[in-house]
Image 1: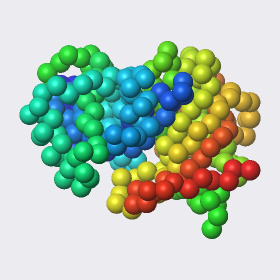
Image 2: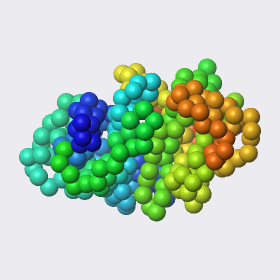
Image 3: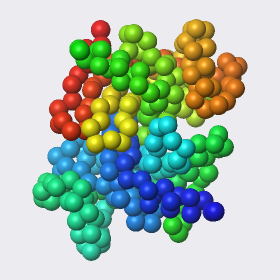
Image 4: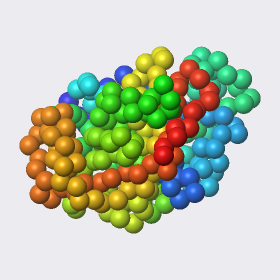
Length: 138
Length: 138
């Protein structure tokens, strides 16, 4: 299997991960639910959340996705930035998905689009992480 | 059970956490193996010439997510703390034994550095409750 295929398998399996931002110069992380479209990740957050304020000041983010303690499952590491969601159809599709997940008023949440510059595939067999530089087809 | 006892219990359940750092205004995070003491200090190891060590030398502050297991009713810790390189042969031996047991490796203390995380804030988070609870550290 290629690295792209391994990454796709993790993206299809996993939806929970950590999102780290920079808060007043320091790292700050939280667990989030993600949805992918190719290599791009989407998540939602409250419009008044601290993390949104962090991202408005510094759009760089780091995501770990698919790590499950005590399992041999592969997991992914994303380095990227939060960018605007321009496509209205995509925005609607993602909002509908996250509405099902969170049952939250759509006017109170905003969609975050995370465009990675690099993805690392971590296997738990002790071998070094494999690196995929974006853009690439997934 | 008070908050410190509950925090110690969460720390005892599994030896993994996600450790965040900042480098050149970008956030980074990785899965790390930890041990802890009764004062809620965490210990981990990193290779002498590793990226994480370089990042911590320039910005010795971390944010750790600890104990999440991806279940419906989950309790985990958010830990903000200062990171110091420390010389404690007993702790170093203990973390190396834990690390080697989990990862089936035979790392020794050569070329590895013991890191001590002294928490400045620790919160007990609950996936089904909105309000986190601050842990009384001292």
